[in-house]
Image (spheres, helix red, strand yellow):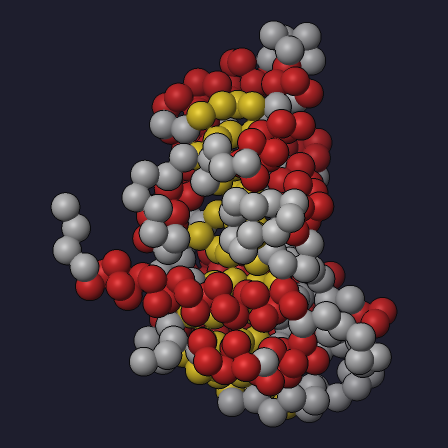
Length: 309
């Protein structure tokens, strides 16, 4: 039986509705999954599960409200077993807050509604000229100011990211013995303390305790992963990890929330409100997100059905 996936439309002012509609027409998607579209009525796409009403010009707060409600409805569907996974079109974080959802993004909303420790992964799993091997980047800290990173980057945060990543790679990606590396915080991993003591005093002991390698300098660790040395790299903060994956595979990478009781994926880009409705939005990453979510569901079923040593 094909995986059944809830697909949210995202912010109705952005390109979410049109890339979802384009993905629904793609023959690869149609062959891989059954889709249940969740979103507001009036967004230009016929939805299966209505999450509010939308009309053009309704405003930022209303856009964030209906987009957030759609995610909540999709979570309810997944938790009840009505769908096997969730694929989400992009949200506008400011609109989400204006609409009454005090979360920086999907990841934090999903964690709060499920009560699970989660980790944000960007994954480029299909070979490309720049990355013949999969590149998977996991964030130890997510949507916080750079000045707040050192305080948030605790041994517990690194241990949690490592455990959620290890479990996700085993259960969702079928990697029996995951090789995980930790990216350094400072240039040259601190250069023996010259550029900061965090890597020697905090990250190195935390990596050993978590059973992962590193910390390795940011200017080499992602290249090593792309050459096949590691199955995933844990980045200490948002932009160092996101820059690496998006330079390597923008438009083909997929956002995966690890740690949930169901798979959730999303495109690697934002709402692109400036080009919405012009017919030029590229649905490639949305298609990849749906295909990867379907692959995870199928692989998880197979792993659950097979005896383990």
